[in-house]
Image (cartoon, rainbow, N blue to C red):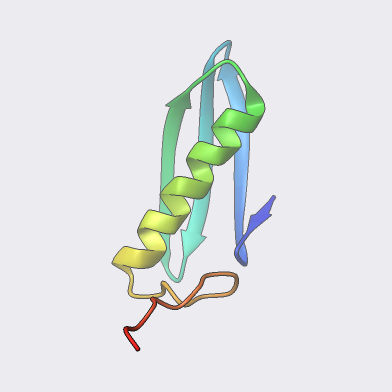
Length: 71
């Protein structure tokens, strides 16, 4: 799957437990999320990718909006 130019994988490892993996630059991020619904697991991975992009200073990456400025 792809989100904002970041490829990620998501796999159910047991009922209600999903394992994900994605890479930003050389950093490989893995983790687990607990939910019964696949689309909620996907949303959780999207949130994690957003957080990691922000920490990496890439918050203006493909699909992300630039912060608003005061006029």
